[in-house]
Image 1 (tube, helix red, strand yellow):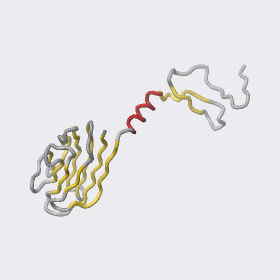
Image 2 (cartoon, rainbow, N blue to C red):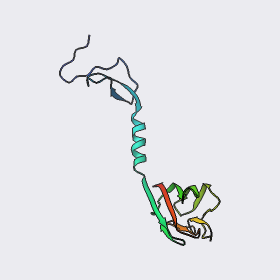
Image 3 (cartoon, one colour):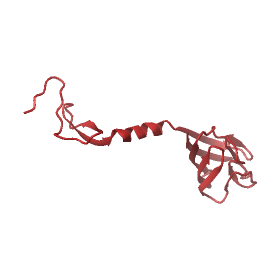
Image 4 (tube, rainbow, N blue to C red):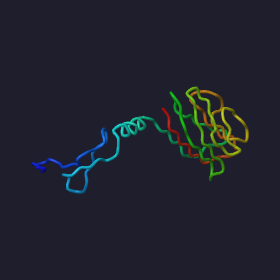
Length: 145
């Protein structure tokens, strides 16, 4: 027999250790095992400690912009023009860019005419440069820590 008083709640006869409780229904008095581990929530909180950078706008031919200083590493995506050029990339703390996937006119760690340069050299902060021969709309998004 279960007796409730005031704000007491009723729960299952068993639950998984370290799982969070969740309300079962809309009464606010019955709980259940959520199947969400406290450690999973902590991992989300830790991921939220990462920083994000977003650049959207036109970049003139031979124009540049800098990414923020990156302490441990970054991962980003780049879209140039109306999806004319694109890249998925990572950056090490020393500024070394690794192109994971890139279209033909995107290069890394060099300043090359006729290309969109993700990192004009190995340096931090990473310099992004448009050498495609005209002004281009650019969207670059990166998560870093």
